[in-house]
Image 1 (cartoon, rainbow, N blue to C red):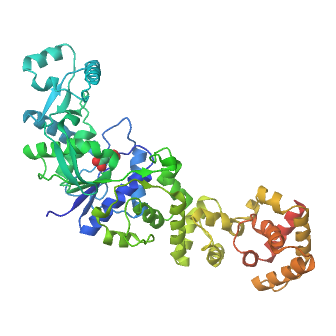
Image 2: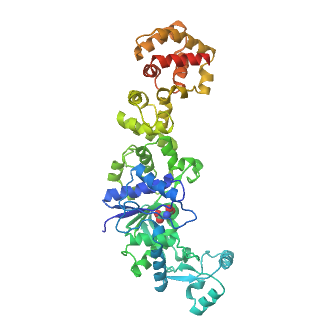
Image 3: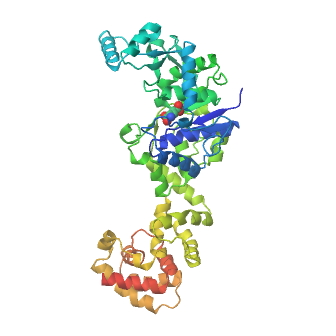
Length: 491
Ligand code: GLU
């Protein structure tokens, strides 16, 4: 068998979405598993929809995720260029070769004529689709159409036989000829369509396996016919790739997860501080599993075990809660230094830390890591928990909802009691802070710990959800702690 060559070939039309990344991941894992090649190709032939920003985002996203490509933009490779917008001459050449060999033809039917034919087919209860009117046009007829000002599209001539293949995920599939009519390869403007450029590049880039979403299933019989025609005219190495159609990803309400769903956007995960490891781990579970109910695994474990035949053809449900829980598990596995380094850019983006981080902030951050590591599910939650400690004091603010619920008259009484006790405390350690507050607030004032410490917590950290109180106050230092309690008292 030839060496495995797979491709990830998105169109740069907006923010990358998780379904697309799942496709990239499965192809990447299959390449790694088989020692094959992962080709990254950009399908940017639709200038009205494609954008340079989106192209940059795609590259940046794969890099962030660690899904490195063996051939593609920036790294190059033997079959480049890997942006289709730079390959237009190739497509024009292949299209004319297909016509010359009788695999494609010029079709002059207008939109209105096609519409009428569709209506008639509907009334006669026939499968709608192009009826082949222009297949046999003589040169004179073509000249006459041109004289009328008609501009032809180029249509592929389907062989008229049933197309059957063994899908790597779904087993044997069959499409009867009547369901796959002749289809357009090149627009009347001369612009080549996905239907042409995608299989042409698969052929030229010697792709052996195509793993892609189930939404593309209906283009597969057309493409299989086109690969055969390309082989016939000597374009590419004559390989018809094996296909595996990955299951749909369903969102809320059992509807297909769509680009418009906020949880489908890759940037959302990145901005919230998901780890690439956590996100990929979760995406791997959308249609695949390690087989032993083990849901937490690394990319390396996945690629070692990855077997397309174990992809489940049933729709997979996207569960943000589960994705977040897996991310939290990943955060817990990081070393303190690693978590520190990953948090810093998020702290900087939020304005909690400056661009140049001082040694003292770094020391504080490192000391605070054990306080939050078990408590956060995303890096942004870490930012929220640590800003009381690391942000400049001018930016410190008490959450208004938490103030309303915990700093009522009773809360203020707690703070007024805590203040002199803390002022007197010389030995500013976690244990001593805890001890004097317990004595003063629980034993002395008779308050319930939850309310008493809740009030102090909101005053000192600004929020009801924070790292543990006594440790937090110890790290914050006596002066800053006392200043915050005073300011909370004065409202
Ligand atoms: N550019 C196509 C898309 O983004 C690729 C589909 C395929 O994998 O064949 O949908």
